[in-house]
Length: 207
Image 1 (cartoon, one colour):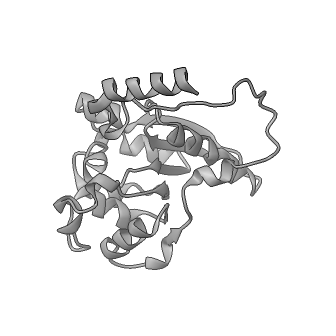
Image 2: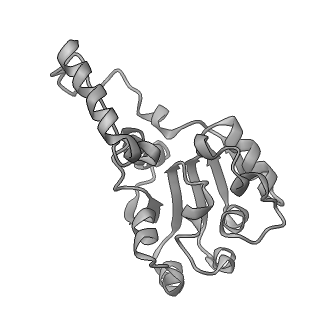
């Protein structure tokens, strides 16, 4: 299958990277191989570039469009893909949300709480246009269930796709007893780079 994968490949979050690698592994369990083209949603947002003009191309050249994994249920991520919310219902290519979730620090934000299935904003439009929605936690499941108008049977609570990467058969060579993974550009972490760097140095020099 030829797949258009909308995600955050440039983020330095180890969990997101593992979740992305789980995508072809998950399909391979059903003897389906994927030819994947990545699109960085954050880059679309940063450059104010939208993909409305590419819809016809996507219809003709892709078998599936996948969004995820990661905390992509934030409205501003979905707003970064198309300019017109109506485009979501015109894709004519199966759309799948893969292990997506709400972001903790935004959980009580009005961007979530005031939305309903009657809205025509991008997040609601995308969710309702999707064929399958896989969410990573209960809060996200409840959010999506509220926003999807019909066909709620397409919503699945699957957990974070990183669980599919867990294995005791890894051939990776163990070179250290401890690793520190600090995503300096992920989420709100960029605001605390100096403090996080000091914490990492303390760990490295005292363990």
